[in-house]
Amino acid sequence: VSVSFGYSVPNAYEAALKKAMSDAAEQTLVLADHTKFKKSYLCKVASIDEVDHVITDDLSPEMERELSELRVSYILANS
Image 1 (tube, rainbow, N blue to C red):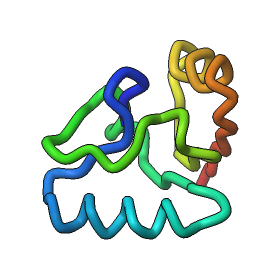
Image 2: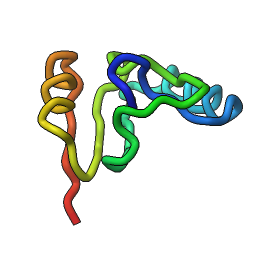
Image 3: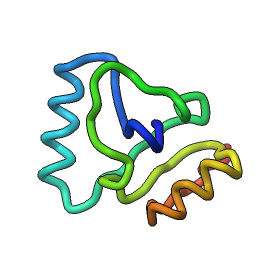
């Protein structure tokens, strides 16, 4: 998950499937642990501003600010 590149995955088939599901959905959620932020993979699924909610275990203050500026809500799911 990268604010500049968006939500991406390493596999083109997986990206196409996730993009189709996202396009058909009323809301798009991204579930990713903190290790997936600030990383980009080969196949883009969507821009971050196309995501409605991010669910993660931890966010840096910088990422919290960036998501808030884009009006992307986030949920911190602690164990």
